[in-house]
Image 1 (spheres, rainbow, N blue to C red):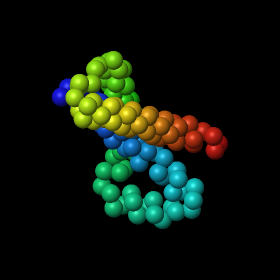
Image 2: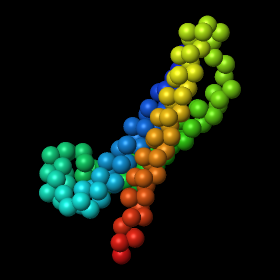
Image 3: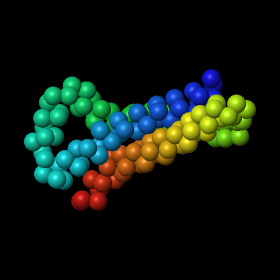
Image 4: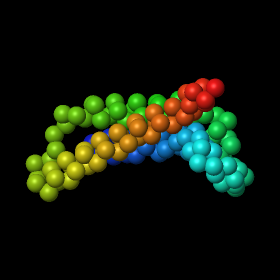
Length: 126
């Protein structure tokens, strides 16, 4: 049971935190770039927590980074853990490990894309 939590729950939490960094920072840049400023204004006025996320992007990135680091550590700590002997459970175990790895890589990509738009993209335009 602990292996399943480490292999799936930790990457899913990291993905959730990383996607929130995309919502706070990359989405506004994308919408303004494609000329959808009115959509961005509507989003800000209709989603109550959106301005709070943007105002606290430093804390958001810190929390997401800690969760991502914890997920990477949990995956690394269980890298040599054996799967069950039963063939059906062994297939499920290996499938969950692959899925957890894909989710973890997606979370890393989302985190770094959000970080680029939050902290570096605006400096490139100046």
